[in-house]
Length: 369
Image 1 (cartoon, rainbow, N blue to C red):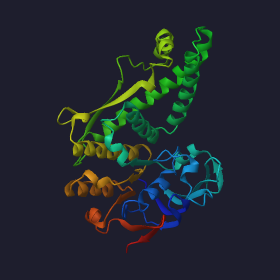
Image 2 (cartoon, one colour):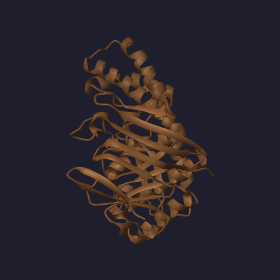
Image 3 (cartoon, rainbow, N blue to C red):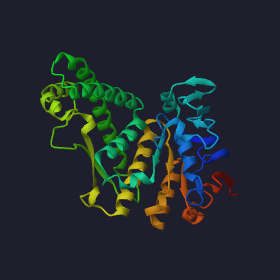
Image 4 (cartoon, helix red, strand yellow):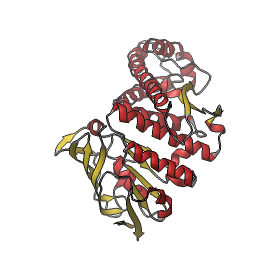
């Protein structure tokens, strides 16, 4: 089994960090400090080493440190499957984010060829009780860890759907205007559904027989309303055609993968995740993240880099210890945040440790020896 980890991470004018540098050795990384000190900003910086807008889904101009607004940069030395890569991503003021790998300009998607990054953040704690959109986003991020081009399919689908919705709002009734858009939506939509189904299968396989202290979750794709959920390109084409009258009345597309929902069940208890306690819901999320890592270790050849923000918030000491043991056993580099060192005591010497403090809006990082 290969390894995937950062040996060095540098931040420049990123959020509250004017300049920061972490030297790492592949062990998990425990980061603690007071609320607002800038801990999560470090994890967000690592998340920018993957395609997309990072774990906060922020625009490039939102990330730059204020008041300087000079743009920002994240640079890393990455070990991936026995290969070393120098990676940096940056955005100057008013410009889009750019990526360089080993000194050469590269598309964001190229980041997924050398690294897989998975995160769990406090905003996800309400996953099972929030609207379906949040669960779709959660699922699609996991899907992208297995199939990075899934993001391209969702972007292409949404672009075609926006055009179709514009026609619907304008009450265009001529079928000829819809044909090409619906063909594009059906093609990309079928790919989206196939990718989601494949990812759920891999997650299920990774949970079966796993030695873990966390409860398994049974997952399935369901429709978020009373309409069917077409899976194939042919079925989607028929659905879009047949739904035009109803879509015209609504002024938007009412059927397709953008209306899917992720249903979760606490397997051992047979209880819907939405009906579980807060602690059980958190444990189910941790279970899925660990399953994601086990599956990627097989498919990609190395476990992902984990970003676990305030992960101990709803875990007791036994479950915290179990989580840390599983991360170490998997061989994953996990960046974890918490308010104090006591939350990471179960790691002992198995983790790097950093303390973060903040003064007048400026964060500083100190290594704990």
